[in-house]
Image 1 (cartoon, rainbow, N blue to C red):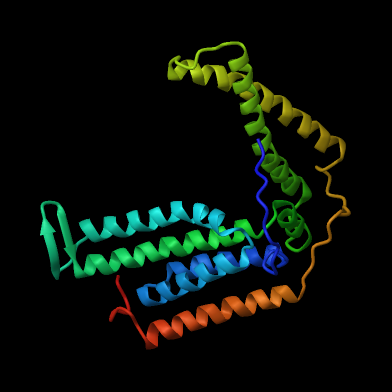
Image 2: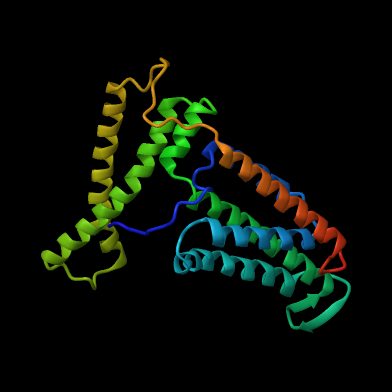
Length: 261
């Protein structure tokens, strides 16, 4: 089972993965302390533009990936709006109680969740796992035994999907009925998949031990990950986005509220 999604490599793909990871973590933490919904709206809009223009993927795949997080935004915001607390009542019917305060808190919570989702999508869509772990080993001095273990685990995911498809085809060839109970289906798939995963994990562990990944000796790397001009562009763009979002949110607010706590 393979997905061949063609994408255009942009400068965001060439940014140092470790730097990108650290910047994303700083933004994650920073957004937690932003309680002005105007700033979060502006920053979310900037991230959406960055997501559409510079991830390099076709629009239909971007919309498909963005749809679940849009639903999370709607559900998170609406749950706070409909069942929150406040003093200025806008609408009330049964358990539904929409107030001005609950509406603002719902928008704030929804845009915060949307910002988290966009940061995660930007990082995952523009960062290859191999380059990320090579960068972690070279720039952040992560031990190779941990980095290659994670890489091996990531590599097992598509292998397990292929194994699942193989078992499914084998059951069809043998004429196994598809109308059996849920527990019978779990038994048919779980046992062969679990046994194959244990065998593969054991082989990988033996191979890593044979190549002395557990030793602390210095190693050479096939990929040399360094810094480039794209890292400066990335830092500058993120800084400008954050500064503009803050300035516009304070000077030209959409909502006349600066703190919704």
